[in-house]
Length: 274
Image (tube, rainbow, N blue to C red; front, side, top):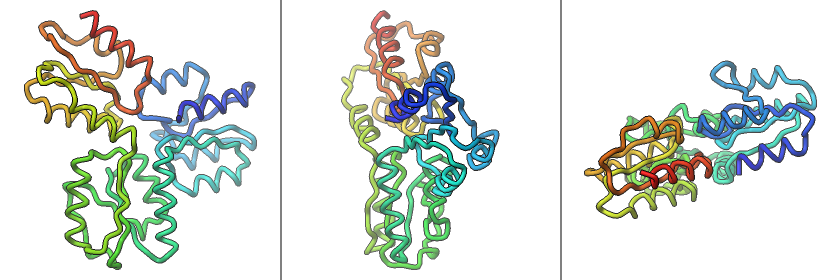
């Protein structure tokens, strides 16, 4: 969907430069393909997205990434007169609506997520005083919550098991907690599918970037579910070709949500050729 949004911007503004604010998705191969197709990636490791917006001119075309973003960037883009295409994931948008509604009612929010992840950063920026980050396995200041019924929301690419554990723990502390935490369909389907490979699989290939949270969750889950198999991660065909795969008989292949179908088919064909 994010790619469709970006290419729609390119189609509707074929004679103009198309700027993508940050990484559209967490996959280096996809980002490289976008650059080869003429998109200009505004790397937030070099400047903040707000600083990048300041460098643009009225009428410039920008695409927001799939992970969500600081709501103030929408205001800045509008004030600058930019043409905006928003590729934010629908599940992230739905969370944002729930959070804003609860805060408008003087409520508070607990967000299960990974610190530093683009989705988490964008969510916390909605209201840093009223949204409290809960990172699974890390200490959490329960006394910071001033209401009995905080809204519980989660990063959409969390691991299903760790989210269930987090929800259970938080319910023990807040009997009236309002639970709206869930992972997105793309993440949920993959985490369910990873467990359906035959027991005699001796090689499990997880495709995706190390920067992709949902990919790394799949990698960890595969290692747990298939302890006798060799579990590896690759970004694309070039990476897996460099790996020593002789001696394996039965392989399983799964991809993170940010992996392109073309890359998946290439790796599938390569594994079949072995």
